[in-house]
Image (tube, rainbow over all chains, first blue to last red; front, top):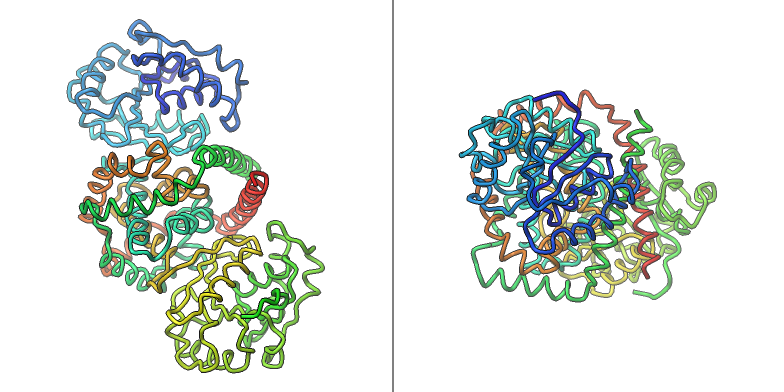
Length: 318
Length: 318
């Protein structure tokens, strides 16, 4: 790992995730070389960037200037020597990534950090043919849309060097992202597991007719989610225990256990075609009445405000 | 149920929840009669109201005027005839609530809605001695702090009349709250079950050393929670499936199931004193370094901004 500051980033794959990363990198003053073999990828990227660059919270580069600072290339190989970091966003297929990483590892100077946006594949599965320096490869898993949501899960494989974990952490942090370190490769990493936990109970409650799909979501958007945007589950417990997590566990642990036991008895069976189809119908009855473009647009607008408000608040406090 | 608009509310119990309800009612233009037998309750309530009334998003009454519109009384019985609604916030003990509700039901005109803030006891457990009109009794469960968080879980017991469910829903909605209807009494209602689901996996991941307590919380506050403040689990799935929940289930269902299976294998054992104590130590190591007053203050300030921003945005869209 060299201590050169990161100025030029390679982005492999320019779908929604790759384009969103590119917008973030550009809005924070980096130069970007982007590649994607899909037909029409270059024009699509331009469209994405025009929308995304303007939305990045606390951007340091104006949207018009962002569009001057990247280059879309058909073949990234001639540029690999010049990059300070690579963010990969290719298809989630082990065989594909194995070949791609063997190639990138061979052709990129061995001190350069290579991060994969993979949400599902731990990197130990696709570094198997890397012979140069697999110790500089890790997962940097963003959340949709990455130019707005600060979270990045940094997941080393067992052979990733600590210095690269630190480098990835510091790099993402320098872009106003909020990285977390997942210390062991775990299926679903952290966020997708927590999300699966809540979804499983959501599916159960809606399927059982205890709450409508719309009200289930409202329970989160008007209650739990508002708090979780600001204090996580453990801090929320702590504040709920009058500032004492132990007090919370002693007093509310038994109730929590009793709810978990009841949830276990009424688990949604993801393996039942019939139950899954019935759930889809129930959800679609609601969703079909909603204008999803408006929902997504509102979410992105409010999300950008919220992230900006949190950043401003944190800066005032320090 | 009379169709008289609700102008005067009785609040039974003036701890944090009762005081927070009182602030909300006052800031939205209602008159409130409050009672609480605890020594010093009257002075404490005054302090709470001075803080809370000013923080209510989209208040229609100025903080100073709010303080003119309530009366703290030692005995609420002489006022029960004059009330349009009661919000009860007494201790979570079945025997206590059974006596209290028998009394309130006997003494309050039979058309008046009586809502309990109970977070844990379904009302069927404490209406057993009500002989006047138990059909007007239900749960209206708020979320801390109720003057800021819009969610209210409306939970009828099997004998609650539908008109009272509607009346409670419309009343809370008229205060800019977001009520949801829990159609059957279920342990933990909706929100506490969803919260238990996420906490169980959070405890497991932290206990296993896969992520620090601080990073676990950050995964939520900088990622999942930001989205959940704006789109619930089901809508988030739908948007993740390109606007199609069925597509999401077909393509991500198997991954979700594989994470749930792995989570099952690594469940946190809430019954193990040893594991619970170790978790407490891990959490306390982090929390003891944090100024909880600052955390709670920041949360409340940002929460009020967020709720206001969502309300403004919703009004502009309609």
